[in-house]
Length: 214
Image (cartoon, rainbow, N blue to C red; front, top):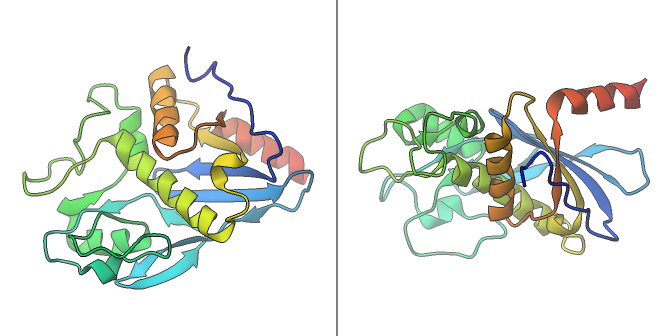
């Protein structure tokens, strides 16, 4: 069954209605309690500097793959991740943008655009595109999943009694996405632990927003 036709039912008893815009440049999350019109933007905790965490309204949809020894484990410590003595994992969000500006060859960007790029293998580790063999690579699907996984971890850190995977989630996609890109978006969400959600085309979401305000 295609991603367009799949309509997983929302978890029963969901406390929040959550909208996620998995954008090409930024990922944004808005939410409201069930039955309420008080819509709020979720501030996503993320690294804004080495060892510095802050909640931001935008999560840059970027991954930075540090070189061995470039960052200490403490530099990438997040509130929900255990301390590790191994090489730091990929950096997601604002710090990734800062580090990627200095070393562009280690930055994964535009994963959402790659999801609709039918001429490449979108489940193969091809990003950062054109990077050398010494740079770890991920697929566009895995990169997209990592942004959603970060959002899920940040949400669950703030709302431990209402985990994101148990909420009523809508994930927006461009109207230009074909069935393959939609299916890969759903797969990325599943990889991030978000198994029950609905896809909504961005123009339709914008129309709903206009109706809400008028």
